[in-house]
Amino acid sequence: MKSPTAIRRSPENQIKPVCLYAKQCPSLKAMKERGSIEHIFDDKPSREKDFVRDFLSYLTMSALCIVLGLFIGILGYHWTAGLDWIDATVEASMILSGMGPVSPLLTNGAKLFASLYALFSGLVFVLAMGVVLSPLIYSLMKQLRLNKCQKD
Image (cartoon, rainbow, N blue to C red):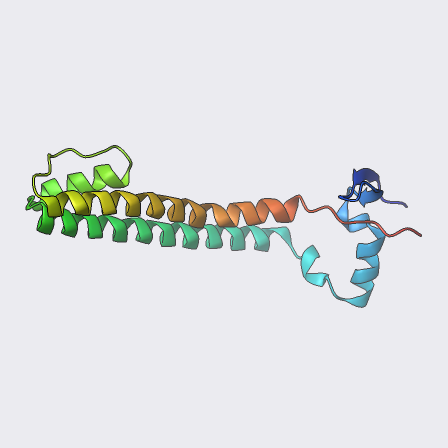
């Protein structure tokens, strides 16, 4: 039984057939006979457990990055602006979440820290989102992978 194929254009504008179902692709069958891709056709439940475990571990790493960034902000606002711990926590939380400052900053050191912390907060947010989304994007790319068929 031949695998259903679709037509895809390569960057050189050449038409190439592409398998729609990976398990029926002749090139994959040949590779499976050689034993080089046995891990692709493993049980699905174990892959789902691995995905959930990986996602939770990446989510934990992301949360740790955010907590570390918040802790840096709390210490910085407490020492440079002389804010109480709770006010420093509110200020750091608002800056880290992108909402903006709450308390007026009176000293030049506090203003300098606030500007550097705002830049740092933007990077922490991008880093955290990248860490959280990386297993999702990897899983999506793995599921959408199309394999080229070999001509018989």
